[in-house]
Image (cartoon, rainbow, N blue to C red; front, side, top):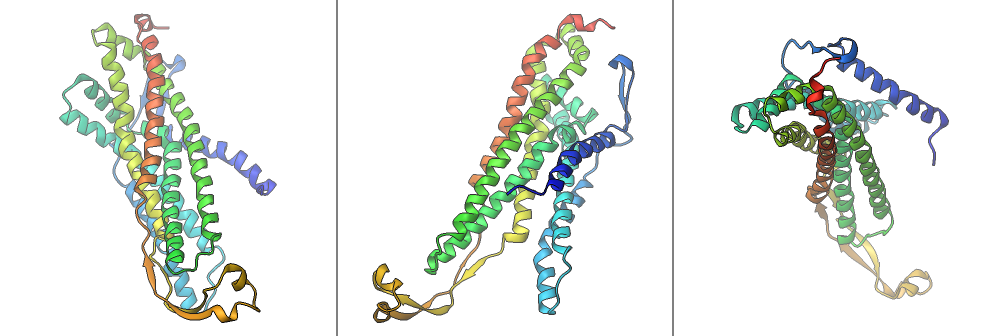
Length: 347
């Protein structure tokens, strides 16, 4: 089924507009002279961990959905029609914004830790770059982290559906269709997450290449003073992976917790008596022949708690880190050309 034409038009026009607005907000403190000779970023203070409040607000909105709906049901009242969508949409956007913006704090903190504990030149060069421009991670990894959050949420939903299927199997009420339908739906979501990661990897490549080209004179100056090209390559890898690893872990955790807020409760089934037919399927299907084979039995109560889908989470997180590594590998191919001594000549 295709969405309504108005929805498609809104998405096609809204995404570029949203990207332009985000870019304008993130670049509001950047000053660039003609030909890119001088670039300055005015930043009064280092990023703080305040973005964690947005994550807490998003998780609280998802966790409050069931209690709010239960409160309306206990008071025999219909909840406002827009309340569930507002909680889910607002909570999801708050959590996503918190993860993306919080990547700036993760980048800055990673840079400070590298500067304090690293002893090799590559890590020290990366540490200075991370602390001087910590918001680069937020700009670069935004699309990838959004895909990781959805992938972590899909993994949590899969665990919930598998718990429902296990309860139905243990209580002998396996319908064989509903849960398999939902699991196949989650498979499609996982496929969409994989495609989104591939697209985000393309954006990462563009951002990394643009960064290398923009700093080519600085790289050329380092090479001219005796810094080996391998050291610069390792510094680029440190600069990409140091904030990416904790950011991906945070995005996976937030996505899983969001799904647990709406579908992480223990699943209970059974605890009632029902009729069982001990005859062949053909005999039990015919009302005229199944009567002698019917018996009444008790279905014991069974409770299954959705587990933590470590394998699925590892697959999503590993895919995201592989996308980052591929991006770094492609960027290093252009690093050699950007470190030529000729780049030191001014325009």
